[in-house]
Image 1 (tube, rainbow, N blue to C red):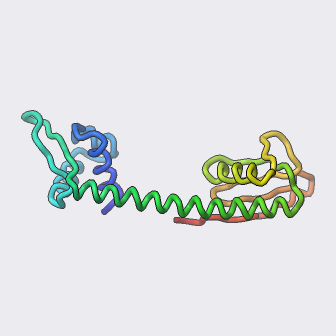
Image 2: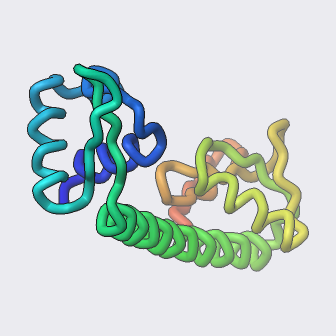
Image 3: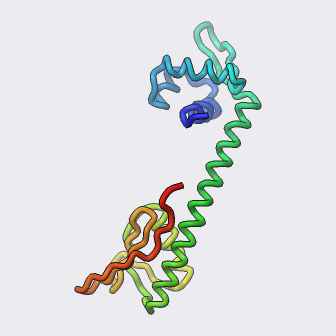
Length: 166
């Protein structure tokens, strides 16, 4: 099943009275495409429609549709946990390297989940992360951590690349 089909099932699960025009706007596709997708979902036994008014339909997920959506959600959660575990391992290794170098305070630079995981790991291991100034800088770029000296020599070390792709 394709992503847009899961998105369609999810949208119907969240709002059974949504119109085809509303689904099209929400998913960024043409109304005619939504009509075709819904007919496919009905044929597969994932969606059932009932008439609310003369020109208005209400959509319901069938037990099979709910099962498919639940399976997809479980797969997504499992993939997220795999990414988290890799990030956490890389953050733990990074902090161990920082501690081995005798560094007690770092300037942490970056946004996103990898940065948040590293920030918490630093805190757990007693390394101060600051947004002010420090002798050492840890850059979080994507899922990679880079340790840089803030001195004039500017040495950079790629500490740990955690995740390339999922």
